[in-house]
Image 1 (spheres, helix red, strand yellow):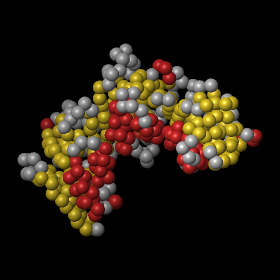
Image 2 (cartoon, helix red, strand yellow):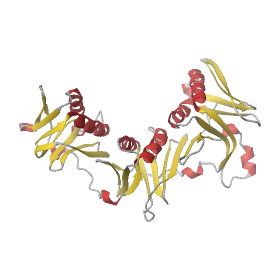
Image 3 (tube, one colour):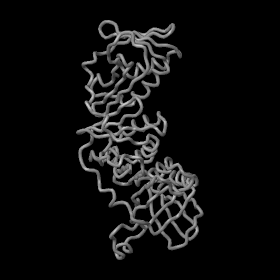
Image 4 (tube, one colour):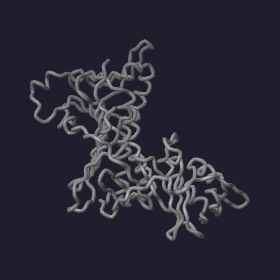
Length: 386
């Protein structure tokens, strides 16, 4: 195997695929990248046995061949090289020489047959999704995916494509992030409902960020795998076992109380007040709503803090506690100057008696961007004990 590639193209490709490589791989070969040189150029692949990604890069192939090389070290070397042509040459015993101007390296690799096989999928039968819209939805939802719950179905986000609508939902049992929008999908396209693992979803978001917003991401399901083709890269991932929670049951039909807040003011107030909040109680911050004002406060063994925001509200006093970390994660991604806080949610079929029996502090709060846009984005947070 021998090929020549520009240093900038090499770095870009390695940067794209190395996110799949685990820092502490269960098998030594998983710490490597698969490098294949052939008639169509250079192919680079990575796998952690659950998520795989393969991409192509422009290169002049002198002699076809393949080898696997340590991902971390190869990326370090590539970044350190001058902006010039880089020559790779496979030597005996899977050694590879790397040359660029006056710099020479020789690193050890492993044979290709020890690397996991990539899933054999027909990626031509996928559904086309707009890259910009998909990336935006991933940014709004991915942070709410759990990392601790034993239920594997919560270790990813539900991706639902139906009736020219793309929906992405994530929950950790304490909050739910929902994003949905109309997209241009063929009318005869079959409905696809699949859970995409957290890591895979994050990598898809990175791939979508590297292409034009109007580009098409081809998405589909085959057996126990889903795939995303973005530009010159295809990512595949296994589907977690289990059923995703019935999220529509959590989403209110409407909310009786609504206030609009400046996002920066709310962010700063939550940050300041939560400095004395207790980790033992989920860094809970109290929201007390009264005529013309919203007071945020926290009182713990560390001390007290409070801050008042002026709001357009007239009605009964209401008090509810929220996890400060959960609020800040939403406020960091909502991308609007103002947000709407909605309290006293009403569900479809809920009786008047049941609704009045609950206080505001007993029911979830819902946050939305304001004003609304073509993206239906909702963030529902369970109240915290105060």
